[in-house]
Structure formats: structure tokens, C-alpha cells
Amino acid sequence: MANHKLAGAVADANFFEFGRQIEYKAQRYGSSVVLVDRWYPSTQLCSSCSNLQPMSLSVRIYECSACGLKADRDFNAALNLEQYARQAKPIPDTEG
Image 1 (tube, rainbow, N blue to C red):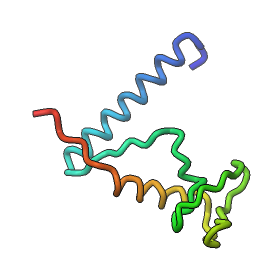
Image 2 (cartoon, rainbow, N blue to C red; image 1 turned 135 degrees about the vertical axis):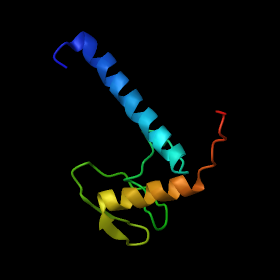
Image 3 (tube, helix red, strand yellow; image 1 turned 30 degrees about the vertical axis):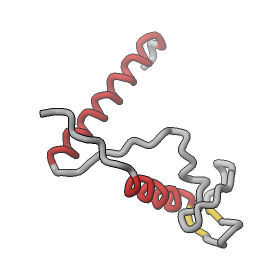
């Protein structure tokens, strides 16, 4: 990736292939893939009460000021993403 003119194209191609493989594997095993907007505040939402609480990246423990939940920041984000995926509407299969 030393060539800055090609770095973006190479990175995009690799992410495209990764996404293609994930879609293929999910379809093969009867699962689905849910895409989440990159700005979804999964680390700033309380997984218990949905309170939005902005916090800096250096804070590693999420402490909810509304309900008192205390959890690892990444674990809290994972719970939020799981809830998001469970509420997502499935996209109909457009391929034959």
C-alpha cells in the first residue's frame, strides 16, 4: 500500500471481496447479513435502557447515567448491534 494512488483502489477491492464472501457464506448456511450505518452509536447507547451518552474513545467502561448499567464498552456495543440485527427487516432474496 506504499503507492498512495493505488492504495484506495486496492483497499476497496479487498473489502468488496470480503463482503462478497460473507454474503456467500451467510446464504450458504441459511443466515443473513445486516449492514449497520458506520455512524450508528453502538458504543454510546445503553444496551439496557437505550440512553444515548456520548463518551470519548479512551473510556473503556460504559457507565449509564440513566439506569446504572456498567459494562465493558465493546461488550455493550456488541449487545446493541445484536439488538439492531434482531430488529432489522430481512431483505428479500433478489437472486434466483
